[in-house]
Image (cartoon, rainbow, N blue to C red):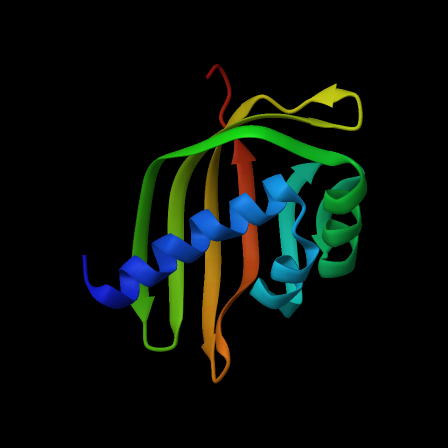
Length: 126
Protein backbone atom coordinates (compact mmCIF):
# COMPACT_ATOMS: atom_id res chain seq x y z
CA UNK A 1 0.00 0.00 0.00
CA UNK A 2 1.44 3.40 -0.91
CA UNK A 3 1.92 6.26 1.54
CA UNK A 4 -1.10 8.25 0.30
CA UNK A 5 -3.38 5.25 0.75
CA UNK A 6 -1.96 4.62 4.22
CA UNK A 7 -2.90 8.19 5.16
CA UNK A 8 -6.51 7.56 4.06
CA UNK A 9 -6.60 4.34 6.11
CA UNK A 10 -5.33 6.26 9.17
CA UNK A 11 -7.93 9.00 8.62
CA UNK A 12 -10.73 6.43 8.30
CA UNK A 13 -9.78 4.96 11.68
CA UNK A 14 -9.32 8.45 13.14
CA UNK A 15 -12.80 9.43 11.96
CA UNK A 16 -14.40 6.49 13.73
CA UNK A 17 -12.39 7.13 16.91
CA UNK A 18 -13.64 10.72 16.80
CA UNK A 19 -17.23 9.41 16.57
CA UNK A 20 -16.57 7.02 19.45
CA UNK A 21 -15.05 9.78 21.58
CA UNK A 22 -17.57 12.38 20.41
CA UNK A 23 -14.69 14.61 19.38
CA UNK A 24 -16.82 17.19 17.60
CA UNK A 25 -13.87 19.49 16.82
CA UNK A 26 -12.11 16.73 14.92
CA UNK A 27 -15.33 15.70 13.16
CA UNK A 28 -15.86 19.33 12.09
CA UNK A 29 -12.37 19.24 10.60
CA UNK A 30 -12.70 15.87 8.83
CA UNK A 31 -16.20 16.30 7.32
CA UNK A 32 -16.57 18.23 4.10
CA UNK A 33 -19.14 21.03 4.03
CA UNK A 34 -21.44 18.95 1.82
CA UNK A 35 -21.01 15.65 3.72
CA UNK A 36 -23.92 13.21 3.51
CA UNK A 37 -24.49 9.82 5.11
CA UNK A 38 -26.78 7.40 3.28
CA UNK A 39 -28.09 4.48 5.33
CA UNK A 40 -31.47 3.72 3.80
CA UNK A 41 -33.05 3.62 7.27
CA UNK A 42 -36.73 4.59 7.01
CA UNK A 43 -37.15 8.19 8.04
CA UNK A 44 -33.42 8.91 7.85
CA UNK A 45 -32.38 7.55 4.48
CA UNK A 46 -29.91 10.39 3.91
CA UNK A 47 -28.50 12.60 6.63
CA UNK A 48 -26.85 15.94 6.04
CA UNK A 49 -23.62 16.96 7.74
CA UNK A 50 -25.52 18.95 10.36
CA UNK A 51 -27.99 16.15 11.05
CA UNK A 52 -25.22 13.57 11.39
CA UNK A 53 -23.10 15.73 13.69
CA UNK A 54 -26.12 16.54 15.88
CA UNK A 55 -27.12 12.85 16.14
CA UNK A 56 -23.52 11.77 16.80
CA UNK A 57 -23.08 14.27 19.60
CA UNK A 58 -26.36 13.51 21.36
CA UNK A 59 -27.60 10.00 20.59
CA UNK A 60 -25.04 7.80 18.87
CA UNK A 61 -22.60 5.91 21.08
CA UNK A 62 -19.98 3.45 19.84
CA UNK A 63 -18.47 1.17 22.48
CA UNK A 64 -16.30 -0.92 20.16
CA UNK A 65 -15.49 -0.86 16.47
CA UNK A 66 -13.17 -2.55 14.02
CA UNK A 67 -12.54 -2.85 10.32
CA UNK A 68 -12.46 -6.41 8.99
CA UNK A 69 -11.53 -5.13 5.52
CA UNK A 70 -10.49 -1.74 4.21
CA UNK A 71 -9.44 -0.98 0.64
CA UNK A 72 -8.48 2.39 -0.86
CA UNK A 73 -8.68 3.35 -4.53
CA UNK A 74 -7.12 6.71 -5.43
CA UNK A 75 -8.28 8.88 -8.32
CA UNK A 76 -6.09 11.98 -8.23
CA UNK A 77 -7.33 14.18 -5.39
CA UNK A 78 -10.15 11.76 -4.55
CA UNK A 79 -10.11 8.41 -2.79
CA UNK A 80 -12.82 5.78 -2.52
CA UNK A 81 -12.67 3.63 0.61
CA UNK A 82 -14.55 0.35 0.68
CA UNK A 83 -14.76 -1.38 4.03
CA UNK A 84 -16.36 -4.07 6.09
CA UNK A 85 -16.93 -2.45 9.48
CA UNK A 86 -18.33 -3.83 12.72
CA UNK A 87 -19.44 -2.06 15.86
CA UNK A 88 -21.13 -2.40 19.20
CA UNK A 89 -23.10 0.65 20.21
CA UNK A 90 -26.44 2.33 20.68
CA UNK A 91 -28.54 5.02 19.07
CA UNK A 92 -30.46 6.46 21.98
CA UNK A 93 -31.74 3.27 23.59
CA UNK A 94 -31.69 1.12 20.45
CA UNK A 95 -28.78 -1.29 19.98
CA UNK A 96 -26.51 -0.65 17.02
CA UNK A 97 -24.50 -3.88 17.11
CA UNK A 98 -23.97 -4.46 13.41
CA UNK A 99 -21.65 -5.26 10.58
CA UNK A 100 -21.71 -2.83 7.66
CA UNK A 101 -20.39 -2.53 4.16
CA UNK A 102 -19.33 1.08 3.81
CA UNK A 103 -18.19 3.20 0.90
CA UNK A 104 -16.59 6.57 1.60
CA UNK A 105 -15.45 9.36 -0.70
CA UNK A 106 -12.50 11.42 0.57
CA UNK A 107 -11.33 14.56 -1.25
CA UNK A 108 -7.93 16.22 -0.87
CA UNK A 109 -8.19 19.95 -0.20
CA UNK A 110 -5.32 22.41 0.41
CA UNK A 111 -5.90 21.98 4.18
CA UNK A 112 -5.99 18.16 3.97
CA UNK A 113 -8.31 15.23 3.31
CA UNK A 114 -12.03 15.43 4.11
CA UNK A 115 -14.79 12.87 3.80
CA UNK A 116 -17.70 14.05 1.67
CA UNK A 117 -19.86 10.97 1.17
CA UNK A 118 -20.50 7.82 3.22
CA UNK A 119 -22.84 4.99 2.34
CA UNK A 120 -23.32 2.45 5.13
CA UNK A 121 -25.32 -0.70 4.50
CA UNK A 122 -25.92 -3.24 7.30
CA UNK A 123 -25.06 -6.81 6.33
CA UNK A 124 -27.91 -9.16 7.13
CA UNK A 125 -27.28 -12.28 9.17
CA UNK A 126 -23.91 -11.19 10.51
